Length: 488
Image (tube, rainbow, N blue to C red; front, side, top):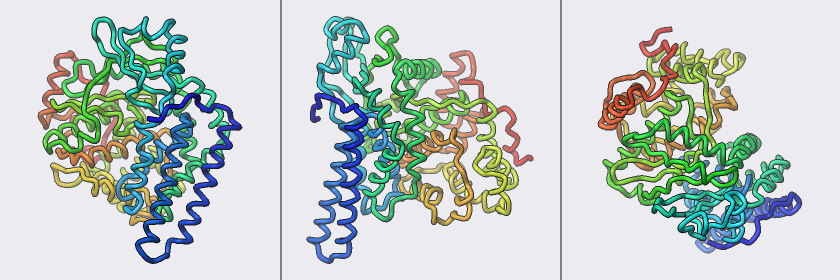
């Protein structure tokens, strides 16, 4: 990693650099269009070289500046769901922007040491028995260091970049400039880029980054999840050390495990086991507890040889009330029951359709559309997620000119569902690349309707609940759902 000595925080300096990046991107894309129809291997190689330089420059600038603009790159790196990003651009797009998830330039050790001294009241060598000056991960708001206590316990110490709060405020003060950075990133994909509204992404960034600046919020979120899943047989949340945590330093248990690149090469059985663990964590958290962790990129999972999964990064957690969760569950039940009128009503109740947009829409057509997005629970079981199946669902759901354009053109996305949509797409991406196979319909019934255990992990989870003396949660979605048997 290249070492930076100072994070640029001033609005003028950050604006100038971003304007330069956007202008350089537009100029390079114009040059590419001019030469696109040139014949010969040499011309194609030259065009690819231009694209590589552009992608590298884009990732470098966003990684150096961190803050809200780096969050732009991280979000765009999730636009590349297979089948949405054209195959000709996918490898280049992934290799450049995906580095922003875990491989960005760290700050100088003395800057990080100053933050720790200010926040924890002393130098690292007095607080910890060991503190690695080199980070094990670097992200948009802070970087993570390995440390050790005198008793031998290993810690993950996340330290916020000095000045990042000022940098974020400078970025968020210029909505149009942030939108232009998003457009520049989409330009990397050329004319086949998906139809993504840059201003909507800016709003998503605006909503989430301010909470992420306060590590006390993340500590509380992580502690809550850790308590909910305490002693769980295959879901692990690292514990928080509150006495070593502040608004700018978060100290948690350090967990060793396989990273994503190694996990996807494991054998089929354990990949499916990991996939089921992730599915259960995502949907049980939502439907049984009314909460979910809204940052589903591969770097936030650690995989273990015994089939367990460790979940990291709780800076962005969304919460839903019982009625809201019940409305969402009713939509799924109506579709599984083939109750087209109930699906239409559920779309309106959830806010995905306005009354005016619902007029004239064939309920059976809407049912077919939504069932296509529920293939994991609708198709023959067991169902195997694949990159291709996820791509087919994503393309039909998000491409404006796809086969369901008569439906998608009417839909709206309620603001409180933006993060939910992000995590379900992200989870599907993870399961697809794990090629996870299971009877997802039965697992879903366990989670939302207290169905009997249908898998080995289901039996393990049921036994864990019995040991805790209660169910895994308040079963929010089970209240008031009337559609499981096709009723109205």
